[in-house]
Image (cartoon, rainbow, N blue to C red; front, side, top):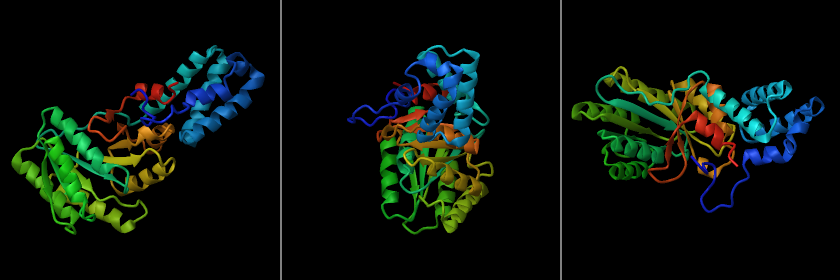
Length: 310
């Protein structure tokens, strides 16, 4: 995941680690002296909050660094970086953190994809469909976003690129009916995976959230254990608003995994940690670009190092 937080063609972004060194760690020996800890930790706290780690995670990371400094186990910038990365990895591995996708014990695995407008749901569906196809699985994509005239055609194009089958209705069709038809077709045709798109919706729209609940209920009527995965796609560039969005969606239907997109365009990757910490839901994928290959299965250890990368 090298250069995960940089856009190709941009000047190299100043990493979180570079800023930490500039402000708090010009001389680690000064940092670890008791009389300098408080001021340095306050600056570290500011940097982590700016990087969207959120208040609870930031407080825990700062506390762990303070303890390490007082124990004298941090004696160099490298050791400090390792200690901070270990703290981030530990936060990502806490609670419900398994990034593996669930698989149906029999019949098709149903993946429901949800999120707000512009988060990158359609692109993600194309990428994950291509990933399943590369594994030799037969995939069907259902276009339950029937509000936007171009959404059905856009998703059909992504399905064609991935070599996936497609089920879609006309614009204005009941989204729950399309979702039902997609699952029914998946069962009848004997496919391995059914991926269902939903309309992008503002998390503040009560009516649209109720409709999302209906989509989930209808899927379950056709296949009682489905959806096996409900993946919430979040835009990694919107900061703490992603936490607010995630809470609202989680209050409507159970979320089994998070997909954070557009991380090629921001150096504020702490939002990945903040959302996992707030929802206790595993991060399953990171989106790093527009191509089918730009979908990274989540690895807590690698991410913790990348977010601090020089």
